Length: 248
Length: 76
Image (tube, rainbow over all chains, first blue to last red; front, side, top):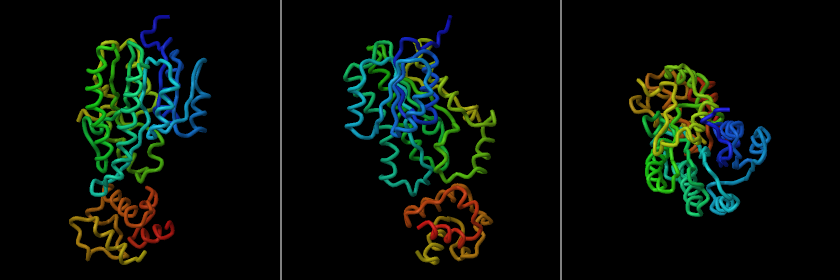
């Protein structure tokens, strides 16, 4: 069957796969024929994702990407891959006057340093096949706009924006593409722990011309486009998927 | 944790509202300057000063400054 978005015969590493965008991405990749390696910190939740993967030949690795030994262990266990999807990330809504270096470090460590170092190790050890594709889950926040109390999160994603352009150039000779998707707000449990009330969320939704937040599966599908050979001439770009938020 | 100290820390989050306008009985959501950003500031202040964080519902369920103080006190 004709399918330019097929991921068959590709092995894809998905971080942050125990929930949200990472979980949806891992599952959708498996449905499109990829062998998927999923990582996450929480064994139970990662196993839940693993059980929802379709077809055979998948792997799961418990890893804390902020720990050097854990990262090294993950990389060592990988033979060759055709794609990476960096989904692991956190957000914190903290007004700037409270954005201490400690709090900033926590966010930058997971949202920026961890995916950077993981990518570097995989590249250095030549684990990414020619024609491979690396996708970062970034955000409109920090690339096109920001939001109140989001300076630290925006800074981490702004850093990713610069990074992908530089890596895209460095890896182009190896035939490896590097892109990001920049979603608006997506309905994931990243909010559950937050201070933002239901009312505030409803108000935020009204800012979107399409009148709702994104769904993890919608982000997963844009990631799949970037992983597939359908996007073979796209590198160093940010794929905007925001329900029209940044139009006005 | 003292109520007076909490009121002072709470008032400190405001720019245009004079601290004298804020007492334990102030219905804080009625203050002109109150906003979702201020709610986040109050929450960050609570974490910084008292090591306790508010949830969205905590601030929504509180009416007066003293209500907030009681919620915080029960958590710490």
